Length: 223
Image (cartoon, rainbow, N blue to C red; front, top):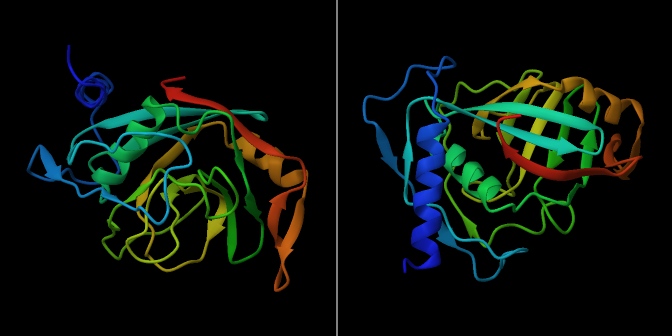
């Protein structure tokens, strides 16, 4: 009988292959796969037990993931052919392992500088990751317009499970790995914003917890 990690690795790879479609957001790298480095973070253990992804990622095609929020479904197309194939492989692995299911999104912003919904932290803002980290994948040309989904972090090279979805625009440096775009369901995030924000930043009244709790009931592939 195969060990659990081997079975999961095969499942992640099979899911990647079966959901592949031609990428359109950026030219695909010439190599079909790239090496990835997922490093354990013993000082910041996993909020839920998960296995690290395989140390490689496909660089062609897209994979659709739907986050079923309590406000409705939001579907994103993750672009393996973009600048962040390891980040895409990581999110696919976490979705397959149900890491995001029954979790809360702790941060919502709606200022001129930053309009995002931040999710993936299972305990509170920037706390409760998968127990490992991996490097940034940025070209320096990233922009964060409405519908962008990107990795959040706590500094260079601290990617894990945290991500954000831009509902307006994010005027931020090109330091956050872009995973892809929302293709259905942005109106659900608009309703979250319309319900308001409980400010937690003294310098930013439009930065804090959603006034009405936002939860990811489950996340899965496709619709």
